Image (cartoon, rainbow, N blue to C red; front, side):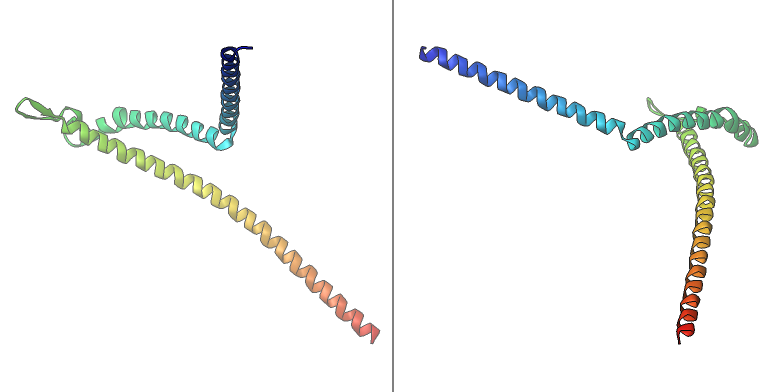
Length: 159
């Protein structure tokens, strides 16, 4: 064989080896990605984001469609979103800002109440678990006392 033929064959072999390495790395990355996605935490996070988005839409609707008209009636029919200040050619819509601050406060309040309710439920479950554990502990203590009394009786009867 000629030297040139050997060089091209060795280059082709190197390219084949590099291709197989790339394919192996790609398939291992895909496997890692599948494992990452299938973990419960990622799925829980995705569900949380979806529910949070829907919850945000509900709260925004409550603010825009129910609370803000009522607040507007209470303060004399003032619509915050229409408030603006014109300086030169620039318009500063501070009413929209006020509306967004109120939205934020109401969303924060709703989330706070939601978390309080969840924590109360989990505290009740924890208390029930603690009661079960203390019952077990009382039973163990009682059994240990019985065992000790039996040991004492056995020693007395032997003497």
